[in-house]
Image 1 (cartoon, one colour):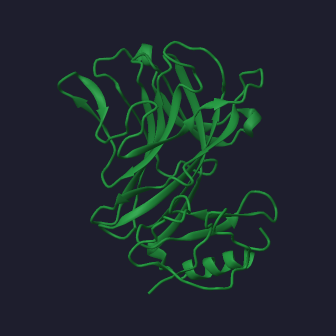
Image 2: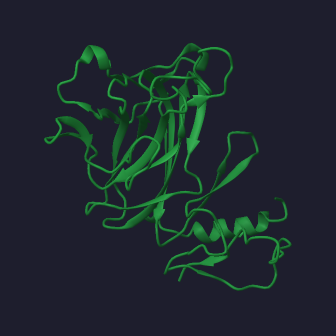
Image 3: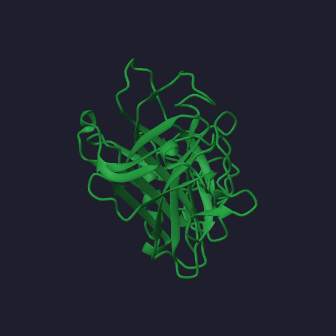
Length: 293
């Protein structure tokens, strides 16, 4: 890592020349505020029995063993064998009518251990975490053909993602022998998705769980980080990694392979001197030196 560090700094300097509107990093620490996130539910009957589904959400204190500060709490009983529970928020100030790439990282707290057995599926692995973004407001609307609340976007179903949302994991925690909530990290690093912003430069974020477990799921969302940049202008972030002195790189263009496309406005630059040894026969290219015209 030390050998490639000067090269990384070079990439940061180049990518840092992007205008602020072209690349944005947003961090929502839900201990501080709910930041205007709104909860919702879908995939259940219009004429449902509230006492059976027990749908609830709030910005409230997380469990004491997690510090007791606030978090986004959401809970429901999956009587429909397909309950979707989500949070959403509208972003503004992005380039209008522009393709952007997003990577989302979620910190949540779960009490559902790996390897458990449940009706319809396990309470941990059977509840999938999904993230997405669309240029219109995500909403649950009644499908007149069946009389059920369904989302007005393509989120896929349970373990399958859709055109507007990706699966980034599940809510299973390591089996620690108790039912205490523990923090989990779920993300889509290396697999960003592309979406076109609305004409006013807005975009709606959405994240939540799609459940196959026919029981209650109650979760605390504690933090959300979102990296956004124009799809035709790659961006690289270097930021603290939670450990004093440690840094991490966030490359919002997917996995770097020899076939990675930088886009029409960016191109690879040929150079002979590399800051590290690279064997083209046995090693995939790890970095590009890029320039902006």
